[in-house]
Length: 110
Length: 114
Image (cartoon, rainbow over all chains, first blue to last red; front, side, top):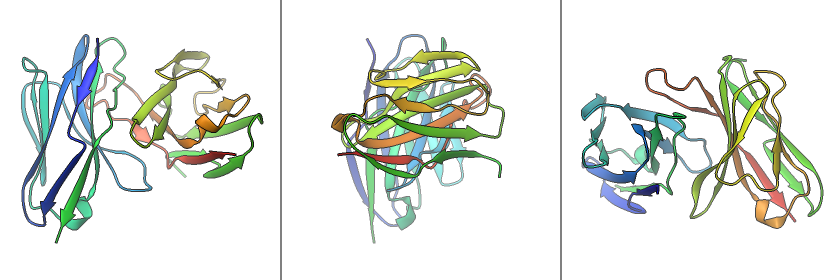
């Protein structure tokens, strides 16, 4: 079957580093996407990993281990504006359609 | 304007009424999607379309109808709205399998069924 797990909530202070983990079981796994959604807004794409390893985009990095069915999103130098929900979304090679989990609510404190 | 738009942005209707939510994209993306988002459930796929005149069910299709006569439009119809369909609905589009497989989301429609 298919399953997707990520923490429901993470809190951190401004300037800190936070890691949001994601474990998945996806038939025919193709890649792992991450999306950010602020309250009242639409999801926006952050990053994508198709191969094992780390992808870095500014303050955000995303990691994938295909053998462990595991990935994480790393946010550095946290800012108040990073308070949002973060979704990991694995996709399968058959349809390339991502499956979104319940997301992780990140709360950044001053 | 370029991008993906949804209308209306807010809608209040009554149980049993028919409601159509509109989605329009200007990128000529082949794929379009409809999601609903409810507290505690994240984003759940209702229907998607791989091209004009090709649609397929997602995770939660019951009570919804879609059509795609033109590449740029993907309306979602609730034929007889129920209170359980109160939700925020997001439309998205992309060309899957290319690079980052990014989905582009519209601003959402907040639907309340009384």
